[in-house]
Length: 156
Image 1 (cartoon, one colour):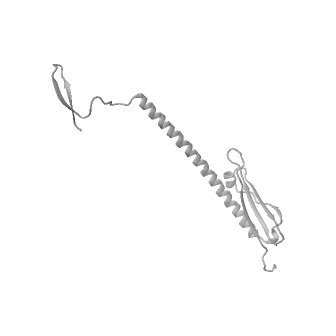
Image 2: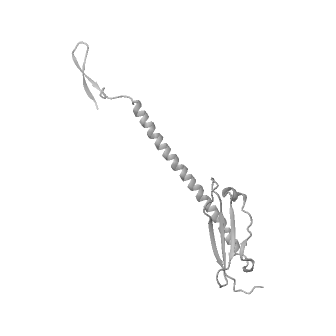
Image 3: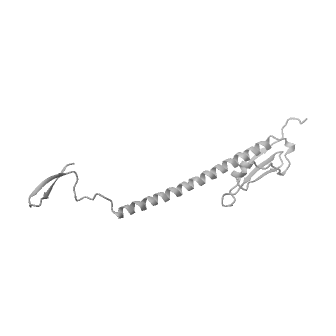
């Protein structure tokens, strides 16, 4: 937009001049505007960093729970594939977790228990896995259970 402005020259006569923008507008930022912008950027940066840290923490927790669940499922599948007579009531011995799983789940505590609730010929298998978080606090355990019944086929 082309603007015309009335100027006074040294002789006191008026002269109309063309200008692209009014001269009474500022051409730079004030220090207050710069400080305000920096404060606003600092707040946005702080909030975004705290959100990203929370997301990373939740992602790690989810990964740990998924690996614990996969390990518990593997132990339970192995136990249900064994013979009925091999499943003795009480706590069962479990091979130690792999070093990769121990690194992912610090302080891992795994339990496998067989119980015979009720009078029917069934056994309940329960696998429980616990571990600690980075602060050394116990995390809610993963528990999986299954029921096993004796096969009706004659044993050789």
